[in-house]
Amino acid sequence: MSCIGNEDVNQAQKLLQAGVLPNAEELDKMCHTSVFRLNSDVIIQACTQICKDIQCKYDEFVEDVWPGLPATEPRNDDSELCTFIVVSDENIDLSEITYRCVKIPSKRNVGSYNKETYHTAFSPRQLNELKKVEKIIHEHEQTLMDKHKFLTMISASQYRCSGQTPNVQITDGFCIVLWVQYKGYVPIDEEPFKKQYGGVDVDVREGSFHPFTGAADEYQDYLKMGCKISGEPEGNKTPKGTLGGLIEHPKYGFCGVTSAHCVLSPAEMKRLSCENGELKAEYPSFIHIIDDEIAYRGDVYQPDQNGGKVGSLVKAVCHKGNEKTNNVGLDIAVFRFSDRFPKSADFPVSKNVDTLNYTSGKTVGFPRPMASEEELIKFGMKTGLTRGKLESEIALLSVRQDLRWKHGRGQSKYRIHLNRQLEFSNINQQQFADFGDSGALVFSRGHNGQDLLCVGMVVGGKYDYTENKVSCVVTPITAILKELDVTGFKNFESGKLQADVGEIRADVRDIKEMLTRRGWECDIS
Image (cartoon, rainbow, N blue to C red; front, side):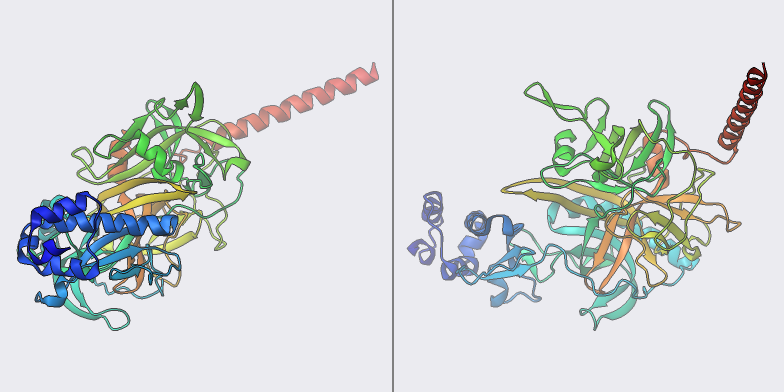
């Protein structure tokens, strides 16, 4: 392309429109030439088509391709060399691609779940400083998410990291942490992150958010909190997760609550969402009719379709946060029970030979005194009963991730974006939550150490590739209750249900005795 040496932008645009692309050497020259950098649309147009060609070549084996420039500081000649980032979990051979390529996985393995977290309780002064950071994050998070498409999470930290596992160096000091899947490159159509926002230092780390859907569990004769539930399949995949709380909904009656992605496929979440991506659907909008036939009903099963239908969806919400929820993002679904109704506050028998009983239905929010010192517990269908601790009692974590399902040559995608989430870490060798635990409720033991008080619901995991650890992302329960217009979960504490059962048993016993007496008298006569 002689137009590059001649710095002829108009001719370069004509060639691109005709389907003529620069080779790798010519693309590097474009990136180094000031006239093309000032008219970056030409470079972006060329890179966009090259990305499509790479994606097409590897078809379903590649999840995404994007062009980037090395994130070096200060900028130098090497920093202007365009590289194509190929996101794939498959063992593909990129040697046939003539352009500079780097392959990264969509989700990396984290080597250790039981790594001790660098965490100390906050002093009153530190807590005030953290609240200032929270305010600054809230002021900038929407702009940051809009400008940086591969920004996966935003959080606050009391320390900065340099280097990679196992040689991470830690420096004390509050900072805003910006999380990206791969921090070696900046997308070609974006500016690098600033060094500070609102006077607070920035620390860029590698990590991603993943909803905890998946896994398997047992059939329950009657539904229990903590058991496996699933939605209707899409292709060869099925949404599944954990039954969280039980509520008496003012409109729909006795219902179960879980994460929306546990019972809705990405295609259904996309269908039910608005143009801005927010999902706020109620019955009967779940029913989808194609060619006069019902293609989707919104049915919920336990543990899967083989176990049978146990209810139908009546409400689903997925948004990044609004005024009603105090800007807390939600990913929740409500389904009305139709079979195998819950009879008690019991949880299933845990894989850890331990279980819970949540009779009061009471909840508690943050912040509150000594919250970071409490031992918190949860019961999920994958990991059972586990214990953890709160990283920060102020909801500071913002996360987003594309739910992407591939089936054959087709694919469906829905983006989850949740602001102001809580972060929990394990306190022993077992991971606090894992895939399959989305929807599970998280509890505090209360002041007496006995009564369970719900503090939130598991929505996914934060994968920290910089420090090589996994923590659990939890939605504050107060925001969920506000959205559902309820004050708490079902209360089994009064013992009314047990009393009613006792009365029924007594009545049955009396009837049996009466029939026996009459039968004996008839035999005599």
